[in-house]
Length: 231
Image (cartoon, rainbow, N blue to C red; front, side):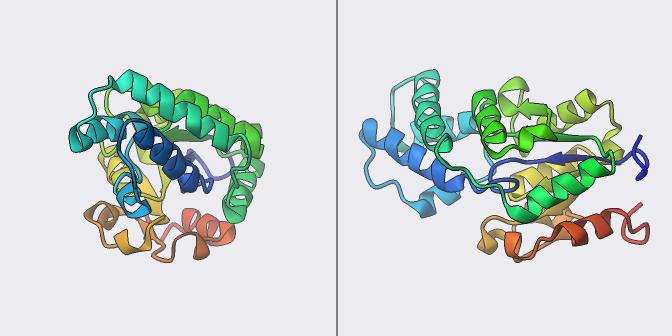
């Protein structure tokens, strides 16, 4: 147990630890273009922020009338994404500092993401975050993606942690809602500023409306260690 007691911290990956959404958008644009859907816009992409890749693709098939199987589309999108992610995925500097600060204190940590296991592994390895974040859960490994709590509950199980002792770091409203459903506290750092008033964020213990520009490792650590702010 760390000097902070039974605390464990579970990070979302995309848009939270790393700035990977532009890669996901481009992978999605290329995939949809190949199946006859041109001009997929960033605004259209934003509606899928925080939703698992598999569930995103299931919605695409219905929305755009694509007949190809989910597994085929998933393979194509993941291939495009891995090609992009391998070149340059940037970890947010203050998030990296936060991970390093928690690691120095011996706090157990995990990543719980809607991305595929291959994508998560590639990004963590490419950014060097895998040195501290070795417990990883993909939504592909659980029954339901966010906003269901499954991925966070599985992360807590693998850490050997009580959900009540876990704090989730999230950038998307479905993820914040999933943390609440899992019985976990949440620091919310909205990737899309215009979504800061989304219902999913209402239950966050700490909502940083300015997103990554407002997040600092020291302030997040101070919130974690301030007994007056949460149980």
